[in-house]
Image (cartoon, rainbow, N blue to C red):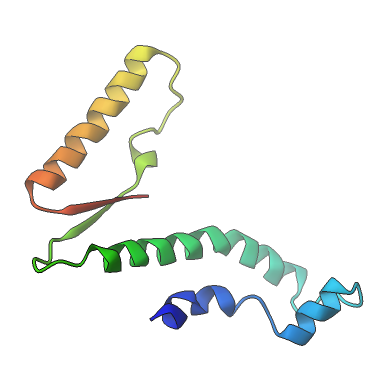
Length: 110
């Protein structure tokens, strides 16, 4: 199971020989700069998907509750500058999360 979860991340790190060449300053590796930029851009998304899957697996229990993934950034789509704006944003997220709980869902915040 761990190998399946980590394979998208491990597939991007290259071979041991390649890593040693880079570490020793003999090479920049076999990846092009474009591939490196793409990997850097993708790492947060890949890491997030692995963490979410681990959270889903850790829930367990006899009853399989639906899992709802909630992106916190959806509730904070503009800068918060006042206490009133903060309270409004927190009320929105609280109401949304409570609705999920009332429906019997398990919530994973992203």
